[in-house]
Length: 364
Ligand code: SPD
Image 1 (cartoon, rainbow, N blue to C red):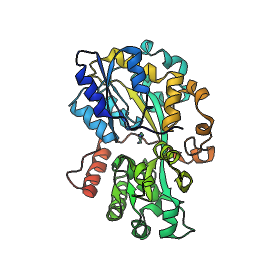
Image 2: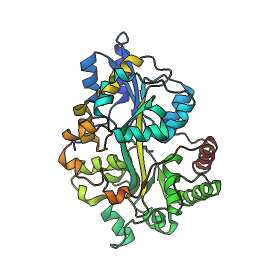
Image 3: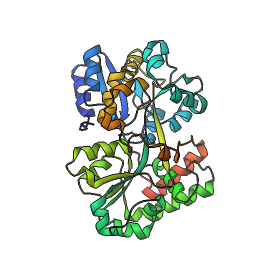
Image 4: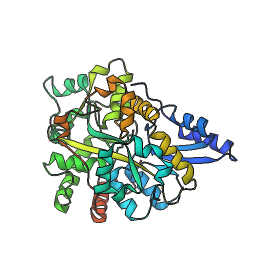
């Protein structure tokens, strides 16, 4: 694992505008989701200027794709959002002959799963990276406010106002997204995170609402908030916090926990929007990301496991053996992959989130 460097979308934009005659490729990705030099390597190899911007949530990408305020050539939706985006014609079929690594390097198990539940025929997207959602903790600070014997073994503890009243003294962060938080609230209520019962979902909304006065909500740099001491607990995606723990001297003071009732295993896809201006180079870029060594460099730096089986041989042993990054079989058996929500359920969750966060809430 190496240190993580924030990619400056603005710097990429500035470069792109200064070279306005150069061919450009517009890539819209989750924050910190390539290695420090991935984009520069692609630019050097192809002569293409990459306009690279980042988002923090599926809701944000979904809105961008649907309003088409800007046309992107390559984007990375989670699989549960990809289903309705496909149904609504937002993606173009992949020309797999232009992605030769598709056939040689990808894990067939992931493709089989996508083919069944997400993207029949694997026509529009392919799996990129995957991960889990858990609770990241500053052990020393939590021990100070909760006592030395406290540990997070259930999601219920995280949403419990009695605990939150104490923990707010050192700072608690929730991810600012209904797609991220409501499945966890459902787990805390001992319901399926994929429940489509309106009563269950309303209960989950109410649970987050009760917790909301004790916590802050942010998707951006939640890992830095923890290691800088701004918070002592944050809901987190594994790779971001594990990479951050490796960057600080007192990394052992932090831990990433999957509670006993389990959690979410998510898969982020990559695809080419229907309105892409440069689909040819988009295929080339996707093929580049599937290169075994390029992909392993990404995994080694950002600490998320990949769907590129051929990359495994180049992944550092310290990454491969990190159980926060690659969950053990026992943890895996308690992980649930989010199902795609119907439009009605998405609407209910969004309305619920606005009732928690305020009517002018916008996704990061
Ligand atoms: N640093 C960004 C990591 C990308 C996470 N994608 C998470 C999707 C979970 N629903």
